[in-house]
Length: 154
Image (cartoon, rainbow, N blue to C red):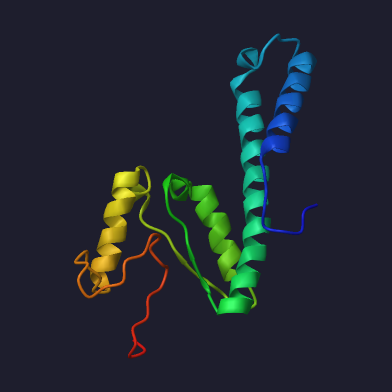
């Protein structure tokens, strides 16, 4: 319903809780813990599908905006969430199905499980483009920019 890039899972969590309570009544059990493994898996899969759909919709809007305003056509998927194979598949489709396909950058799953590994990946990427931690002669940023350009246009 929203037409911006903001979203919240508060309503989704409530909907899942209410649906779970309804299934408990239908199955004649007192709590969600008493549901069958199949029921729990179906609830979890439904939650994941809708949660990812929210991400796809909002991210699609953001992609349109940054492509139009800044010419960006690359999506970096990082952090623990990037280890989720279903999310990777869906975001890859979001990138490749565009009228002008986007490049999706994502580290190997083994590097997506902890912040230390992600920091190391970022360091490798920086080294590959000649960036260093020597402050002399470099601008210092409170937040590291996605792209850097020098005065000579490179």
